[in-house]
Amino acid sequence: MKKIIFWIAVVFVAIQFIPVDRENKPIDSINNFVDIYKTPQHIKVILKNACYDCHSNETIYPNYAYVAPISWMIKDHINEGREHLNFSEWGIYNKELKENAIKKTISSVRNLQMPLPSYIGYHPSANLTSKQRTDLENYFSSLESK
Image 1: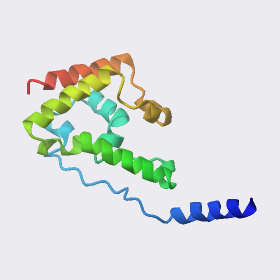
Image 2: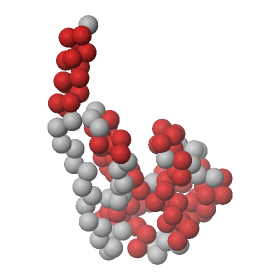
Image 3: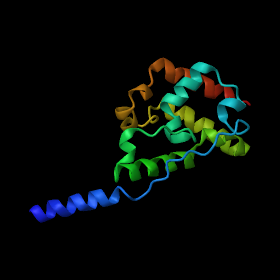
């Protein structure tokens, strides 16, 4: 049993040396959602608290994101989130992608699918109130015609 625990500890320490890229790409205001639409401050705050860690190039990595294998799962989750929607790269989306992203965002916020409950558990500020959800829905709805 001691050998098993020893080898588990050795593997755990060893995997800490496997690098995870946590560097965020620079933000270009020409492509940045909040700059393009001159998003009101209260909506920016909601987006940054509830969406930006997974859906922008402005991810703030918590301390536990530096411990493998948790760091791998978090980075994979962020990569997947950015693949679906990246507010920092909004300007490079074509019209159809923007329209779909807006509709999906409205639906996800309305149906309590976003932010993910697992994310809210570790980031209480992402737990949106009914008013914040309504504000986001209304804001994104106002963009549908733009």
